[in-house]
Length: 272
Image (cartoon, rainbow, N blue to C red; front, side, top):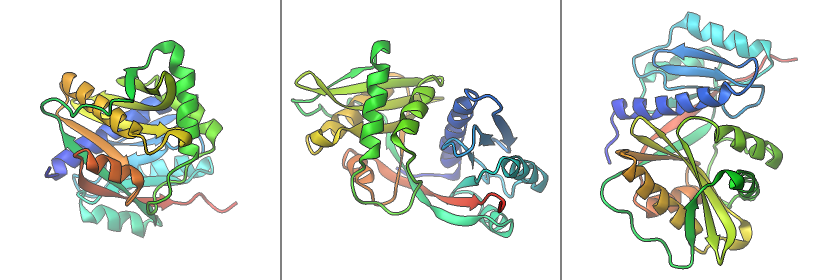
């Protein structure tokens, strides 16, 4: 797959709409419109706090940036700008000049959706989430993410398990989400989420319980969501991974290709 700046803007702005939808679950949240992208503040230290989908039309208005930065600074919160390598290079220079410092990178991979997905491994089954299973899926995601596979370079730090559980439940209330549960022998062993936004299928996290890893659970969750997204009329599936991680290896094995990278540029909170 070839990624153009227009495709990158489409993907990043879908991510921005997701963060904005999550933020609106929090009292006192603020969403800033920024040249087609967004600046989002949900609560202090929320992973939804970010500036994303910006820089594709050149530098950001300094007055808009100052407003966003002041909002974060007043609340003692760091502001993370996630800027695509396909955005205007001037934006990276602009943010560096304003005191943003490199905080890492994340990879955006894509999969063209056409035709049926490959069949899943025979001993793993997957089903769409039913409302009574939401708490169970949140527990699975929290335990899985709290015990990550070793590997990968940089990226965001993971919050504690309790925060993952709470944030996952909030995330699943955002428009366009679907949850999935994987089973082996009837036991729940993994879970995943998918969000559909204007033809973009966002693969919004997947986790396998540590005792059931290396048995094809991630593969079945990927293939089930690819098939579901294709049936829903999406034309691209997107997943964001830590560079060189096991997650990146898994999705590339299933046909995802690297589209672009986001640089994570962080404006630290004011010193206390």
